[in-house]
Amino acid sequence: MTSFAFLNAPLHCPTCGGQVTDQAWFQWGFCRSRAPEPESSYVLGEAIRWKGCPGGEVPAWTSFRRGDADSGTNMGTPEVRNVIVRDWAQSWLQQACPLCGAALGGAAVEIRDGTLVRAWLTRAGELGAATYHRITNVGCRPVPEWENCRLAVRDDC
Image 1 (cartoon, one colour):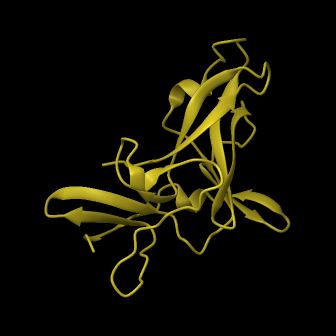
Image 2 (tube, helix red, strand yellow; image 1 turned 90 degrees about the vertical axis):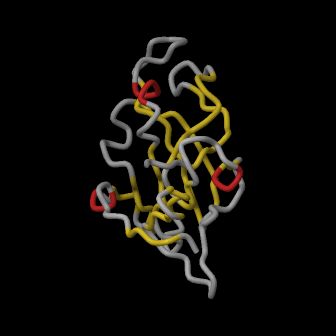
Image 3 (cartoon, rainbow, N blue to C red; image 1 turned 180 degrees about the vertical axis):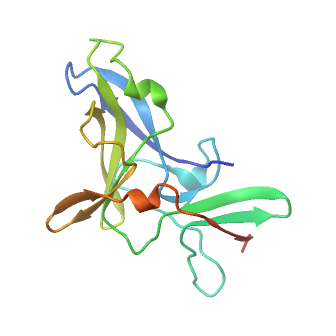
């Protein structure tokens, strides 16, 4: 099952400035489910949370199972602390702004030093098609190999 993290923040149209929504869905850190659960719901300024196991291990790109049930996923890796993640699931945010009709490119969240620092609605084509963009000291680059990353599956720890 696809799981998400949820950032509660006003997202405004980049053209007219009107608020279009108040939540971005993204896949980075511990994503509990398809609904906003406390473990994977955020506001700006909060650090990304990861599911750790006894002994301190934090499995990257891992889906956790409890019996036959999904119990969340660590999307990404805590070693990558600077990243922009696009919200691909809220497809209505990739259509026209309901207020002014301008073309939107979806929501994006920016994580710096492991903390959520910004959320915005992009203009159509602003970030290209990639969901993940790694921020480095020389700029931002898409990371297409993370798009279809095979998740490890393990018993919940």
